Length: 293
Image (cartoon, rainbow, N blue to C red; front, side):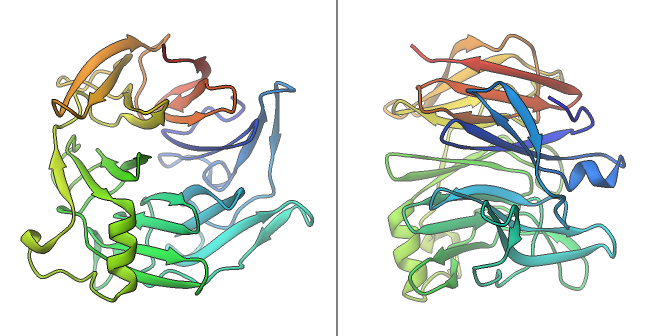
């Protein structure tokens, strides 16, 4: 991978092309504003035009690369805009309404004509992590407030499996967080669009807690009707190569394999041929193609 300074990687696969972004720790600003793409057919990396924010969330929406929120490094301002990469002009455009709450280092997922963005950092009277969740409806071009996460967190990972949205890991205000929360994607969207997303107590929330992941800072992946937790770090904060599968019937995680190398802060994307690609991580620039049997 061309950029080796990323410590937290995000990726999106659109067809046979994987788009990759990441954040650095006090490193080159341009590295944190850079998105690169990898053609799995041509085995070639290319750099996209420089983006104007760091710590953005990345998602495939309606077969297009979309970036959500972020942090403007020039003035340290949290941004609310939604950017799409337009292949016709080879540049970034802003076709959608901005977020209700500007945020960065959030997690984002899409399905059909909806986007869900959860958690991250916000600035109100001070910088703080948030549990807030917003959903975007394409037909109305409106963001709606949804049931918040059970706990404020940043740098979480998310995945959808059989209409269930899972939000995994990240950081709370004390430490790395291994908890996993799930919700019906459709119920979350429908409740938010009805204006009922601001719950007063957790008992009123649609979110449910499931078994914690074995490793913190793992990547999340849904593939072939399975939910995987990939890599991360263990109880001693050592990078792990473990791949764990979530068993919904027993609500437990079971180890099913290992990565070629231990890594945390990496990202996973599913390819059309059924393989998944594991990219980067803290101090790691490798790219590995794997499959699940």
